[in-house]
Amino acid sequence: MFPFDPAKVFAGIHRRFLAAPVTSPYTGVTPLNGLVAAYFVDQRECIGIMRAIRFHEFGTPDVLTVEEVPDPRLSADNVMIEVSAAGVSYADIQIRSGALKDFGWFPQPSLPFGPGFEVAGTVVDVGTNVDSDLVGRRVVTGVPTAGGYAELATAPAAAVYLLPEGIADHTALALHGQGSTAVGIVESAALSSGDVVFVEAAGGGVGSILVQLAKNAGATVVAAASTEDKLSAAKQLGADALVNYSTASWDDELRKDFGQNEAK
Image (cartoon, rainbow, N blue to C red; front, side):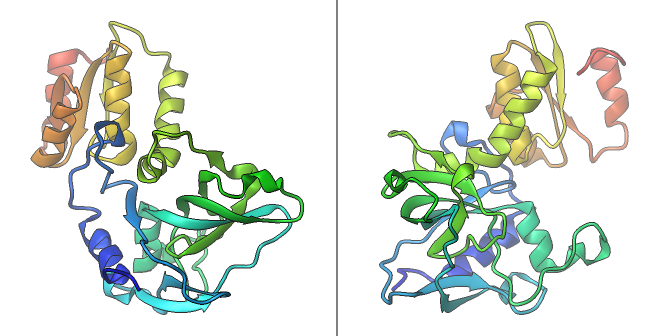
């Protein structure tokens, strides 16, 4: 049995998601306002039956429930992962709340629905087209069909990344999507010493990592966020200057301090 109620854990994370300041996994703390690692610590009791968190209606975090469901089916090109850490993303929050129903580009999922688009864990089985050497390896990956809030999840073998020793599952998970996005942005910008970098949403998952990467590149980092808690977290991560863009004159202050065309 779970040593806690996982539905309540995930519901609590969903409630805190938009309110909590974030520090990056580079500091040893998993982001809350970005990607959150939550843990399943459990031994599976029945072959072919697993426990998963799903919802049968859109609404508040309280719609999340723990249910016994059949194990996911393993296709020829996929791997089966015993989940140790499941990411909670902004997409999960939006889907669960029903907020995406107003956007035609994102169709509403059929119900019941199991959230969770990123997981870390150990490969326990592979499809017929996949190298069996993956069994027993720790991996992190995206889950295209969602369903990561569960004891087991499947993902394309081509999409999994092997985890080296010394990197915990939850740290790797926190860096998987948002870390790669931040690295791509910094590489595209070709930052160098002397640059001034303006990081919007510096309290978020991508933003908190951008602050650190830009600082490490030698740039002067101006971090922008909407609350003092988030700005304080950005300062701890190395930001040189802080901008609260909930104030009406934040852009004038930015131009005054750094010039209209100097910030990247």
